[in-house]
Every structure is written in C-alpha cells, then in structure tokens.
Length: 433
Image: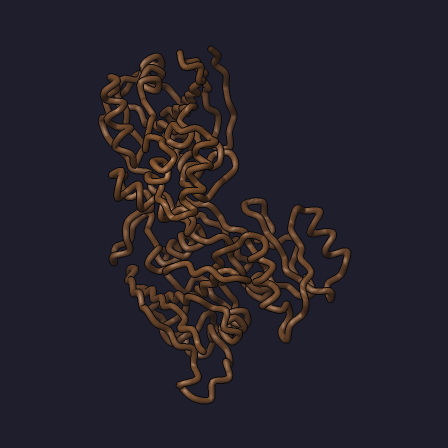
C-alpha cells in the first residue's frame, strides 16, 4: 500500500505497508538489499502495544523489538515484519489485559487465557510469509525464541535456514512469564542461560536475586556491591574502577534490568559518576534514585542523562533554585524528612513503594549500605568478590554497632556463582525478632 524511508534511532529503514484480507496492516522495515545473497536476517515481531510502545515490564516484547532493530541495523541487511492483530498471542488488547488480571490472581500466562475461554495462542503466520515473499525473501535466519514461528513460516513456504535466539535480561515482574514460555511453549531460554559457572551473553540472574518478598510500606531491597578479597570497595584514594571483571559487571547490569529501581547516595555519584543504566545486556533500565539531602549533585552528572528516569530524594535543607533547575531538566525531586545521616531512609523507601517500586537494587556507597543494614531494611545481599588485595581502603559496610558476633546481621540461603576469576555470592537477610 505504501513504501517510504523511515529514519529511526537505529538508522534508516525502508518501510513497506501491506494490507491483509483481515484488514490488519503489516509493516516491514527493510535494511539493505534483501532479495539476494542467501538467507535474510529476519525478525517476525508480534504486535504488543503495552510492551512495544509503553515499555511494560510484564513481557519482553519491547526489549526484543529494540534488540532486533539494532541487530538488523548492525548487520546492514535484514527485515523486521511487524505483525498487527497478534496482540496477546492473538487475543487482542482487552482480553490480554483481562488475562493479566488472571495472572495477578495466580494463573500463568497460558492458564490465564484458558480461564477466560480463550485459546492459548491463536496467531497465524501466513500473512507474514506472504509479506516476505512479496519482498523477494524466500529463506531467512530467524531472530526468535519461539518454535511456533519457525514451523508457521515454513508451513507457509518460507525456509528457515537458521534460528538465532533473542534472549533478554529478565525483570522480576516478567521472569515467571518467561519461564512459563520456556517450560510450556518450548521457547528457547527467553531469559538467557542459567548461572552455572559459564559466562553467557545473557544470564538468568533469578537465583542471585532470590524471591521478591512483598512488604506493606517499602520495596524488596537488594544490596549489591563488588569488593576485593580483603573487603574493600575502593582504594584509600577512592579509586574503584574496576574492582571486578567484565563478566561480573554484566551480571550487575542484568540485576538492574531485573529491578524496578536502583539507588545510590550522592557520595557515589560524586566519586564514580555512574550512569546506572542497562548497557551490557539487552534489558530495560530501572528508575534511578539518588539520596542527596542538600542537592550537591552536579547538573552534568551522568545519572541525570536521558537514558532513564531519575528522581533525587532530598530534604528541606536543599536550595529551592537547585530543585527547580533539576525539575526543568525532567528530573524528579522529592522532599523528605531528614535522618541522622541525611535523607531519612525509612521515609525514602516508603515514597518509592508508594510510587510503585516493588524491587530496589542498592549499589552504594558504603554509607547507604550501612544505613540500610543497620535499619533492618535489607532483604538480600549480593557480593561480587574480585581476586585482588589492596590493603587500606574503603570498606563496604561501616559500623553496625555489633558488640558480639551474635549481634551481627545473619545471612541464609547462600547462592554461589563463579564468573571467570570473580565470585558472586548472594544470601537472604535473616529476619530478626
């Protein structure tokens, strides 16, 4: 029906619009010359308004869409077929949302449809095959985890010469959904490989993250830090880059992708200037939170960039003009009560919970980690240990007032993973009476 150049964040594609007999419009985004030179790198993407356009974390669709476009653009030759009418595995938007209600009541993604009297999957792939055929594509390297798309295209006359899986870093809100697709629909490891001692491009970090425990007035809090073998997170001069290896750092990015929010103190922002986004694995970046009681944060700090949302938690001690300057840059500012060391931690966690944050990754610094442990708000501790000894330096945890060993924070349910020369160890924090 129409062909037009479409510039995107991944480069320019040629967009071809096809109207099907069903009246649905399929859009093919083409990169390079695809009618010759063997199998074409292809993504057949099922429409998902909530994931693709709104960034919903209940599924992996939006992340897969962006990853596929980036992969095709990097190769310089390929096609993405966007299949409308596939919303909710063919159920439609309203019934997909109704199925979400059933999932919130305990059903998995398949049984939710069955409870509503809907088929598990009513999608067909003959229209997508017809689109590919009209573009001159007869053989594809298919970017998918779904075997049904492979068999559907082949039944309609498109040869699938190779399947290239497209796993993404799971979020705590969609990990069960991805596990169900793998277990009951035979999808190829949609959340990546299990942590088993080998370094994978995308790793399933659910074992490290543990079970997300709901709380009435605060998020589930996971403390994560990397340290040397002698327990330092920085040298005496403050240098902390890089304590751990690249593999361990990719796991940290996957943990960010699994959580609703990531939190640090202003000291970490000033010392390390972190971005706290998800870059080393395909996944969604969490909302970034900074504890900064007087708004010392620099306007040029990387944590304020446009790659993810940022909210600064401050107190009445901060200057009004600094608050307004941040808000003018679309940075959230929340005024909270002051605590002994700056922003009151309990008040901060309550505000996050009220804002919909159910899982929070805390990445430092030592003052924030110590405050959360001392207040009894930590649910999980994940420590990356590097094979380095530096002697004097900054400790991850300060004084907790433990006069006896028995007074210390007790950890249970150990999970251990080796990543090259680094070790990753995670525990639940034992609840004290």
